Image (cartoon, rainbow, N blue to C red; front, side):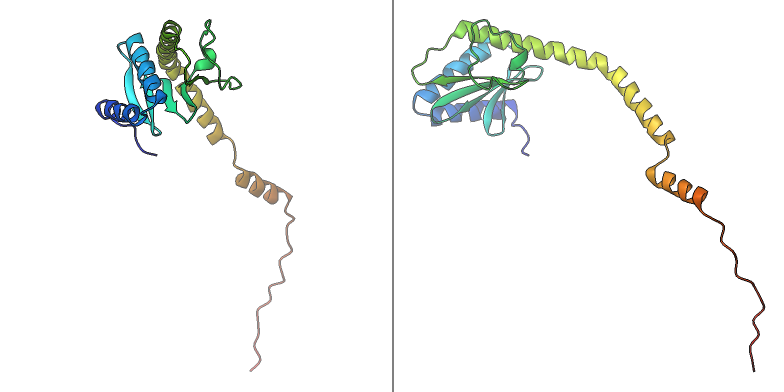
Length: 181
């Protein structure tokens, strides 16, 4: 997998993508981009998987362009409040949600701004939750490893069982061999 492009390169790649979409999709992607960037000054533009990505403490959303839609996929959309009901795609998933923007549809900039800000707040809260949970998780992993070392392996169990159930074998009588000359 290719690494993400540095922010300066990502901005240039997003500019090129918008310019390359000379129809309504380029204008829509440019309008969405402006709203996303204005929602929080800490948002960083990235280029991953061949598509624009906006992040702040984690992925906020991606901006894919298809023949009939410009799709904004929110990485943790299922956990975000959406009172304006912008999400209209990928509604079956447990994590992601998406907004499909079609030609001629108006963009509700206020609702999109609220959604982006909620995603940023969720990412920031999740980052602090992960940092707080890390020591507890590390202790749990260490305890599990210690238990695993204490448990006999399958091979050791089989060998012990075979040794316990083995019958002593009678040794063949040992007579000195005489050779006829």
